[in-house]
Image 1 (cartoon, rainbow over the protein chains, first blue to last red):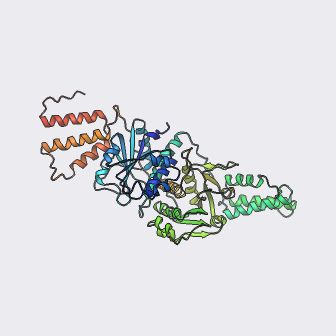
Image 2 (image 1 turned 180 degrees about the vertical axis):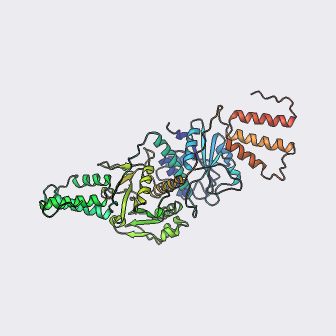
Image 3 (image 1 turned 120 degrees about the vertical axis):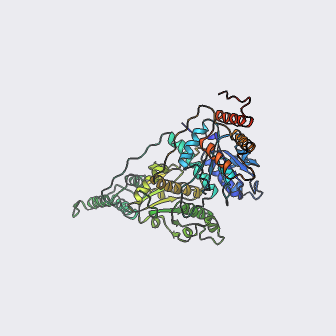
Length: 253
Length: 253
């Protein structure tokens, strides 16, 4: 199942900063979303063009924005509504995490329009607005600093929607790695690459004046594999042995 | 297993806009990350204070930034390095998705410092920088518009790290819903709530002058359940029956 992106509407309620509206457009377009409703925005359209600047090339999303006066107008044809809220309420409302949210949104978007609504920069959504929602989504975060920018919240949930679609298309998981020695540090690995380059140059196998892809291919091989400290030592031992013709270089492993 | 957040370093290479540095700080703090390295930033520290403005209350992350001249300095003590790149290269490097990335970062962060590096706003990471990486992470998105803002990319991956930790702590999945009729629209559901309110007022069960939590509790119940069109019709039939004492209101279901 791929996601019916066209049935997913983003709704921003009484947004104050037009830059956030533009950033939301850019976040949406990057993640294949297009439909943006603004409920009674405070400073939009903005003659200063901050929304346009932050939208970057997502001008089409910006141009197609629908401005409405009430949340009811933005939701009237929607069959499923999720509110994004950082705050807990006096009466607990059903709260889901972003991945549950996206599973439900994607399933419901097969049947009709769904909406994801975001509140004001300073006060979020009111109780009356939250009561329009079938569920509230909470983006897990720092319990001591819960202050996600509204465009960042749009970005995270839009990303989750796209990621859901991507994973449905069949992504592979890599095999778990196993190491019986501590991993080498980046400095140790760079030392190895320097050693390779000097040894292979001395051996006439590598020509720094005409390097082709040799060092890049070696880097790709060993970085993909991921080296532990022992392996770095072994490889450097081999290089020293190659340089000196095998004198005084026995491998002690 | 909870994530060892203190071992995860974010590295921004030659960032041009200090506002993006501030936004990255805010994104990081929201997701429990703290360690930010800047490699040769173009306009930082910025006397205009854009970084401070965008960092909002993440001043501590901003204050603890380490500025270095080379990527090698930023990575020297790291045992695992992932590069964020939107571009494909002449030689394919191992590419993982954000969820695979975070699994690997979290596992490696148990053993030592790990780094997640982000390139320039306009040109990303160079081939030489990508070659420092054990893997590249690609954030899936719109194939026709791949233009994620750098702070948005930091936000997405920082969110995935925190989400991984959150899910490890044991989140529950909701039961799948099943409907044999089309879902009701928001307008239909609002019509039902209006009907409830007027009927219950007429019946003396509800006092609009002293509403307490009655309507809110009814909304929560039915929104949590999610109503289909048939259920709305049934409930409105019941309300009409209650109002009229049962005259001419037989349920036709």
